[in-house]
Image 1 (tube, rainbow, N blue to C red):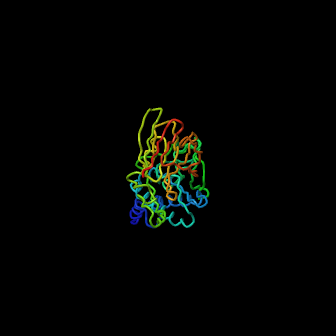
Image 2: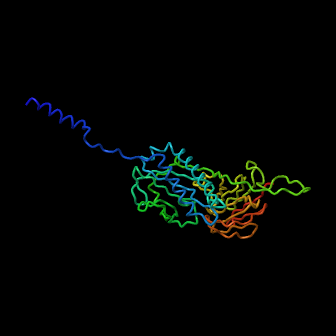
Image 3: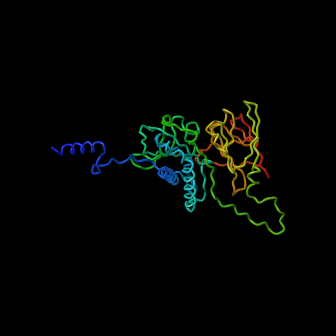
Amino acid sequence: MADQPSNWLNKLGNLLVPSSSQPKTNPVATVSNTRILNELVASFQDSVPRESVGKSMLFNAHFLIILHPDTYEARQNAFPVIVNEAVNAFTTFIESEKTNYERVVPVAANWFFKFGGGREFGGEPVTPTDVKVVGALTGILPGNDPTQSPDRIHVTRRVKQTNRFEKVDIDPNTFQHIDFREPGAFVVKFAFSTPAPITPRPPAGAPATRHAPGLPRSLGAGLAQINHYIAELNKEDSYLMRDREIVVARKEPDNQHFPNYLLLESAYVSNPHARIRYNDEMHAFQIASFSRNETRVNEQLIPRSEPASPQWYALPDQAQILLNSMVTLTFQRHD
């Protein structure tokens, strides 16, 4: 009988403090910053062979990263570093693939990343251990690309059943359960180390030129001046083209992040409407139109092409560009 109090106390102690012999429950796994980075890099690398055409390298430049709300809160301070590491990894991969491609021709003009928290995506639950990356050439969010039908968005994502990235169409309503916050949005300008064009040496006695036939002048001084007139508003303004390539688009909140967008406040301008670039090999400007409405250069109609496969046309050093018969751009190359 003397042992009974001791046994009773031992049993009570085991209830309050589990003995070391009892199995321990494993803590819930969490998503690390490296895991998010690896998912981004995998999504990008998969897109290169999928999107590239012939000797032209194409790839996803827009990414949505969907996390469980708890994971989002735990990792949001690391998002800028993750984005920076992802861009470095993307650039390294592009450099390593240049032996397989002659040209790097992305559809977008910047890397775009948007993080969001949600408990459900596409009919599937989002758990604290999930990282869902949705990638696209450009313009993932609804309304960014008029070439897409209004009820479907063309993206690449990893399918859970196969664990492989596949091209799928997503209903824009799929995103309505995701909380995309502005602090989770990042835009990074492309910085590819493309070789400078070779300039032939002029023959002896030839007159000296004012500058090499590369870029017309420094980016800071502007490559060209574009004055624009919006008929419906009777409004004039000007734009200094400092980037080798710019996008002409309708002025909307989703476009405010992009530094190389010429935004026009007109319902007659598509989103995007056109791209203008300086071709280093030809030492000349070119234009491509993506609008279902007319784009004319000096009264000549520019046929429409797809953003993923732009058809480039010569843009004279002085030109009038007419968008949908309502917006006039006066293009002037700088010497």
